[in-house]
Image (cartoon, rainbow, N blue to C red; front, side):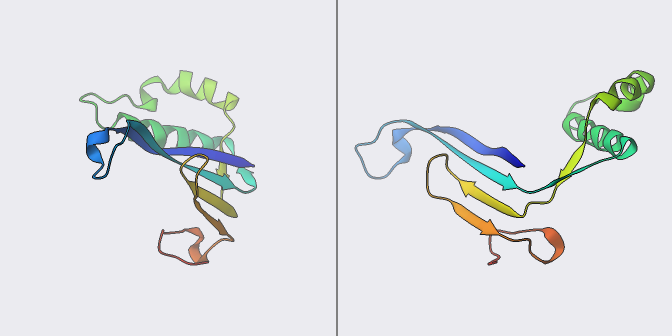
Length: 117
């Protein structure tokens, strides 16, 4: 399975460049994560949904929580297939541009931009 994740993006004015002449552009980064998905069970899927909602709502003055509509949320949750993907290979960079490709899984299952595999 391949998952494409979009990272930071934004408008860049020609004024931001030291050399010219330049034109405006839109800068963005994507990552392609390759691996075999592991399907989560119903309880772990619900816990992941709840944690995601908590994270996304955390900046609001009165955050919504899944337990506010527990019966409804648990009724809908079985229609969601939760999964975990531990990448075995990934690529990151600008679309259509040069990027970094890493093969293999490092010890501990996590990469940092400084690790060489």
